[in-house]
Image (cartoon, rainbow, N blue to C red):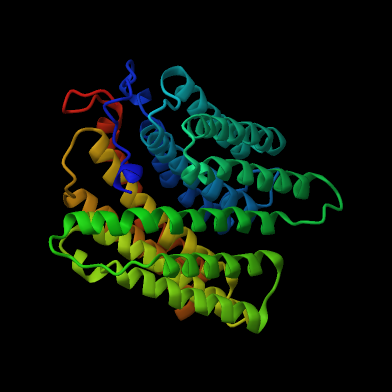
Length: 399
């Protein structure tokens, strides 16, 4: 199990050479995702408040959601998986000019969508997703690594959702809305965090806390993930009311039992651990809020931001620090900068999710206040990690 979860460079794989930034997938994509996070959210606040015109071609809300999912989150997923699959299979993933070309294509897509060239941007993004899928599936299939085939199929499902977003935007009478497909894309990443998080969070915790006893049961894992998938599927399919609320609350209870078995209270002295546990806890919050939204008690957007900012955003800041430290040859120890980042992202999620529930009349202000700690966290990440991501490993190894 531990061999499948390690993503550091194995000795059997020749390390890439050349420009350090392009030696492994995490380097350019973590950097680009952090820069995107710093710029996109404040830009959205200005658009949302009417101080700035939204990019043409896509409705403003769709543009914001699309860029947070396909731009920010999937950039991190791409960088992480390019690095992880290389280790899982002992086979190469893109490096050098191929990696640089994919990163450049990601940038071109973002610029197209920002400048209002939505048709071109979405088509180029579909090409990007296809290339990422190929880059993941070739080593996975070549190594017969069936356990992880799903990570290579994820970009293809996101591609299908993106194609539906394109059709919903530009084809009259298309039966599925872009909003539905954007929620599907977010929920796919939520489920990915459930699978990968269920592997790495308890393992990292067990490895770091001496004498810790955890409770792990594959039946509980399957039940929690299955119930979560069912609740999210209900929302995508438009099944609301009592049935969805019951499924979502059951999923929340199962996820809570799953997380408790990983012993989150034992991680308080280790920021690299507690950020992962705190972030995963937002799965439970999101499911409870989804249940409440099914009856109209609260807006669905609050649940979506619990998943997007709290769960996905929190796990991202936790993993882009941990993996960048390890892959640049540094000790897995969080300094003051990392600890500050880990406090800022959950704070942003709390302000965005709970603020409008407490004072709905100040909704726009809560959105603006949430943008501050979010952007500060990723600005701090860039300040600390740009030299590390752009420089060679400190231990002299390649990668």
